[in-house]
Length: 427
Image (cartoon, rainbow, N blue to C red; front, side, top):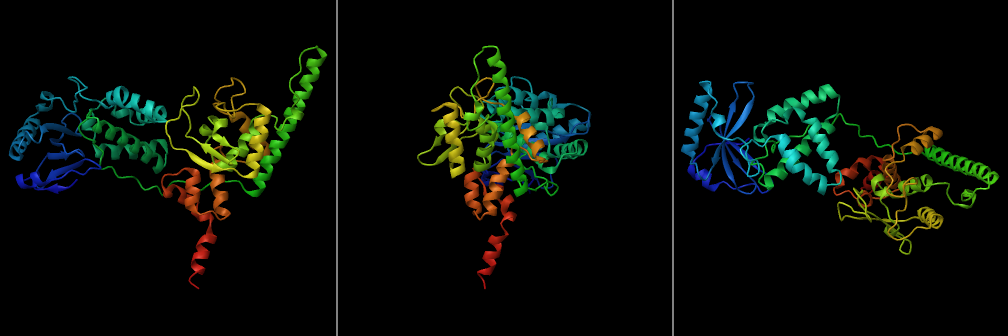
């Protein structure tokens, strides 16, 4: 927090930071703070220690346009004197109130459940999950007015949470970033006056597992061998069942020996390994997203709900289809007889959006003796194979849909030949 001498001249010249709100403390002063919002609003606060629990809290004096520097200093002196006498002057003014909170403080719980929660669920693909994570992680702060939550308390919280839950720094940083984003949203909409953790510093993520899991050549061979064995078993089971139906004079089910695939799993895996598509986007993939004439597959963000299909973003990733992917999808299209805005991989049970294929996937991995390989790791495998075979990182970034090259740099170590070629240019 910058420390400055609060003078009339300084106050008139100070300019807001358009990217964030900034706190200022008076040099040599005690308790008086000025908050300058990104929009230019200026508000006086008193930072004090509550007698009941010794925790630091903020008490709002008021709009800095209504209180001069001397008046703010005088209010601070009177307030702190009252606290030292054992009085509770903060009860005379609502702390952290907003135009939407009536006469009650805007507690973290009220802010999240009544305002930010409904918005993030409606407007963000993983909004429900985000809200749940914030409510769970910061449960001990729920009844606190937002403006009273301090960085010092959150520093203690994350040390305790990390120790008790044995989580890595990247997880703690994710929680803090989500809470900070929620507060920033509230400030922009004037639901809360300040973002109390605007100066939050991320923990170093040196303890995080940066290893990228992708298939070795042997694992890839075992995976497809296991898939082929699974297809044989399903076809054999279908033949056996049709014999049973024939004996009873009942209609037979389609002969799977005449189909390119026994079911959805093998084509889904081929699509995932050759596009890097996320599972949610795969479940929502439509035939209209596939342009066989141009040899392109359009990947939309993972879906939340589908009528025809509704996504939470307009960002689309365009993936060129290689021969194997094209052959696979053409065969699957002919087999299913679906087209247009119909799902490429509908649920075999409901015909609607598939929600998971955990059991089938786990069975194939077990049969292939492949350990610690998640469905999402096929996305890492896609990127890793591209880098290993010489694709530049920016191209990989575009194919993965990363907005920042930093996310793609995790694969850089897989391309030592690029560094070698660069150094050899000097010779």
